[in-house]
Amino acid sequence: MSKLVHAQWSSKMTFVLAAAGSAVGLGNIWRFSYMVGDNGGAAFVLVYLACVALVGLPVLVAEWLIGRRGQKNPINAMAELAANNSQPKAWALVGASGVLAAFLILSFYSVIGGWSLSYTLNSVTGTFTGQDADGVGAIFEGLLGSPGLLLLWHTAFMALVVWIVARGVTKGLEGAVRTLMPALVVLMVVLVGYGMTTGHFGEALAFMFRPDWGALSGDVVLAAMGQAFFTLSLGMGIMMAYGSYLGEDVNLLGTARTVIILDTGIALLAGLAIFPIVFANGLSAGEGPGLIFVTLPLAFGNITGGMLLGLMFFLLLTFAALTSAISLLEPVVEFVEERTPLTRGMATLASAAAVWLLGIAALMSFNVWPQPVMLGLNVFDLLDTFTSKILLPLTGLGAIVFVAWCLDRQSVAAELNVSGTSEQLWLAVARYVAPLGVILVFLNTLLG
Image (cartoon, rainbow, N blue to C red; front, side, top):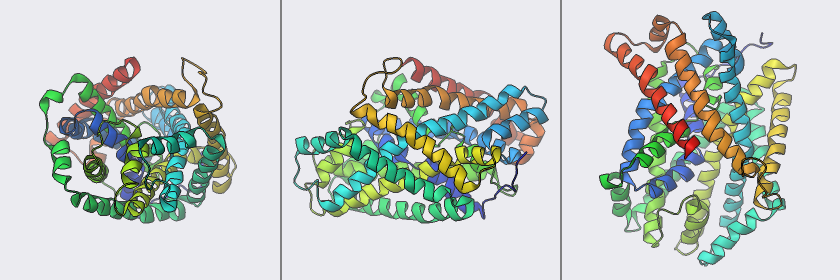
């Protein structure tokens, strides 16, 4: 039983900003951009949008519903709802899987967040100015090759996350998203505005929205489905934790649509900000993960106003990383706070310290400890693979199956404010379409 009165979001808008802030992270700006480039552009984008609606939305609603009904951390919420609905106690493992996933992901996500902090400083100091491709590549390799630098930036990033989360729901999470989300949108719009001046904005529009159906393949469809699932912070315990702070007056389906529109809109804006710069400089859109940390710095270092543009871009990347990182730490802190006598501040410090220590092992994978530790993977790759290919899809699948098949159908319909045809559509998507989509993503990533 919880030892404290459970906190609540102060308003629906703040909750929307927080949920969107969690979803809007490196996945939107870093991963979405290079996946669009790698998978042929517009065909991938259109399939991605369909997958967000058919797979992402129902899983998102299911996780919020579990959190709101349980009013506790994901593990306790699942355990209590299972007991109340005469279901096996083993359903609590779904919540445990989500909390574990958030903990493990943040350990290496913080390392990447540290990269964005480092590149923000590099932009201020003009490090990229006049660099050729070899020079920019050497800067990135130099960062990865220095355990001391990586530790410094990993520590700095985690310190920012701790400072925000320790302040609680109202002062910490709400205060951060009220500042960071509008700032992120403003920076994105300014960069898109710059993209319009490059002379290659039309080329970027065509690349992203004029589909070449010949580029569509089974692999592209599965990649789009995987991106739709992962970009919404599903399967990490985050949305269950955020849902536990949610009042009964919030319409879950309507709010989910709003969050998905914001999340997808920012991902599309990121592409419209990045690809005009890429095309204007004769660079390739299919550069993979290096698109952000190698390709774009090369462009920023050799265009008029590139220092300012680079600063704005990497500030944006840092803001996006922070909004996701605070949401990743939240389910872990909520669990520790409710299951131990620790205060909010001490629970945050204890959780973050454990994350920080594991992050050190992850950052050492790039330099002093690149050796495989399991399944031929180093620590960083093992954490990434285990969470993205196993924990996230299994947690998301467990959440949607539990809500669609184990909870009372009438009470769920009433809570979602659906009836008649709308209820039948919800049931069809939640019981069959979304689980099948998650299973396909799981099998593809596991066997791919």
